[in-house]
Image (cartoon, rainbow, N blue to C red):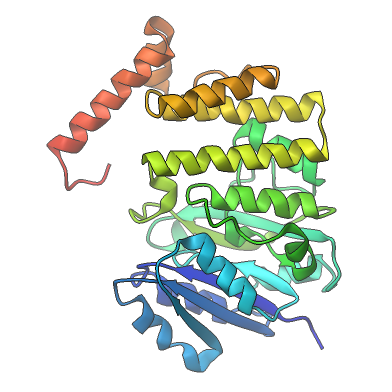
Length: 325
């Protein structure tokens, strides 16, 4: 019998997008699938939307609000599949996404290799998506993948992956103490538990941007603490696998990027990040930002330019509190 693929969907207040997401899961050309939704205490009509799909081989599980990682862990616990497909409740899969990746992995239930695929951003309609190749869009060994991603600030969103249950079990469950960048920390472990990545340009997924409820847009103290811890855990795991000049530089770079992103906020976390950069041998990453920001920083320094940028952002926010910026 062909392997079963479990499509796991954490859901929190996603009533606007959930039906479209579920349809993209159920329209897969790889027919041996199960779809598991874990609703994480939604206060909108997400559960009502989800329950309309129960007759279509969709299992709906309800839990009190514990976070996306806890919802994914519950779904993973319930999953019966030999392969795992994660799918956020506002993202989409192309109809043949899973089939292309299963063929890439030779439908091997014991595969130590994981599959990635092409992905693109959209806001309202997937026809907006532009699939622009990135350096990660090739076959790679795990350490090379992480070094490339961290040096160049590249990423794969959760739906781009297809992972055998064997590798998922070896990597362990999602870290429920994390919120921001929980997926980065988890897939770092997935990568290091694998023997490598095979990439398919035909296995397409769609990453919705502009969702005001998205954790990736959160900038609270708690969110930054989560982001720092995710980096700390991920870099520790990479260095356990390979402690070399190239991995130390990549680790220093992710902490230097964190410093640029958070400044002037969370000073204690910045001090910890600065200590990490020093202990890892330093990073040559230049300040990050748009053309105007970089031009201004040439004259007044990146820290003052960052404060100015933040002040302008806050002024616009309070002048137009209902306008999404």
